[in-house]
Length: 120
Image 1 (tube, rainbow, N blue to C red):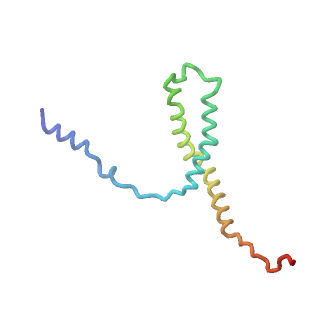
Image 2 (tube, rainbow, N blue to C red):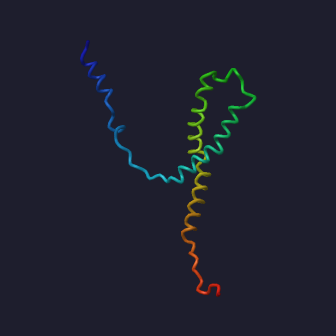
């Protein structure tokens, strides 16, 4: 066996420096993440469930037992991808509304107790 071929194979199996570099950490707003999940499950999850339960689907293109078993997993991954792309505007609007409500609650003046209370 030629040793030069073995060296080539082992060098090709080593990780590339660009791939192994750590990505900078991003700060993710938990409200935005939750709003995206909510939009995904409420709108796109319902849509895909209705498509799966359609009375017009054909047995020819059904996918068989594999589609029955792994269809919900595939739908979940599709829902996440659709929500991060198309549902971004709606989830951003929800996040902006939540942050505005929180900011309003913080800026609301507290009630000052009146010095003239009921007299006995």
